[in-house]
Amino acid sequence: MSTEPTTPAPDAGPLRRTRRLLLLAAGGAVAVALSVLAFGDVGENLVYYWSPSELHEAGDEAVGASIRLGGLVKEGSVSRSDDGLTLEFTVTDGAAQVDVRTTAVPPAMFREGIGVVLEGTMKADGQFTTARLMVKHDNEYQAPDVEDQRSMEELIESMQFDT
Image (cartoon, rainbow, N blue to C red; front, side, top):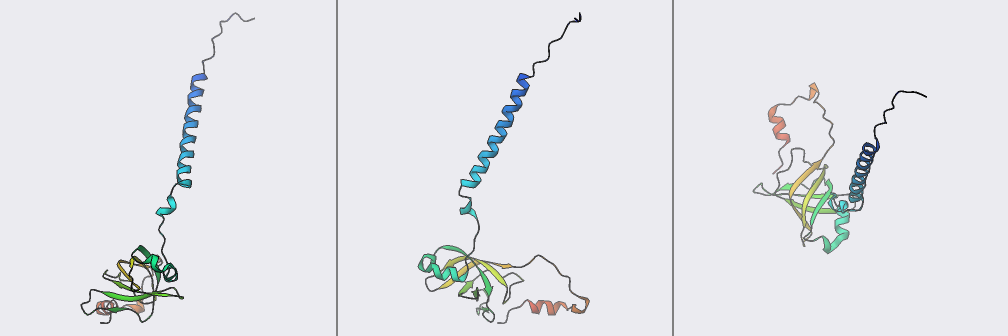
């Protein structure tokens, strides 16, 4: 037997319990957050746009509702009013088409054949009116070739609409 006095081991119980409680609390917080995301009305806040076919299928239910419409600008359908403030064109998905009237300033990339997303309302006469016009495009930038250098006048002309 040893004659040296023994020191009692430090009590690790309270430290271990505190860690366990913190771990359980963090796990509970994560579980609550995941439950809110999974079972909450997150789907109600997702942005979804209708195609012209879906808009026609909705019929009278679409009239007056705030809708996001997406499709392609039909070739040969773009026209400006005499005052130059109103733009009219047709959006198509290949199966159906919707006539659109907007007072929004079109983005520089707006042209026939490009994908667009519009936020507006369908009127009873079948025309979609909007004040927000966005174009869909890829994010790849291509610098112009040296042979494709155009003058400033040519660039400005290429962005003008026929009136």
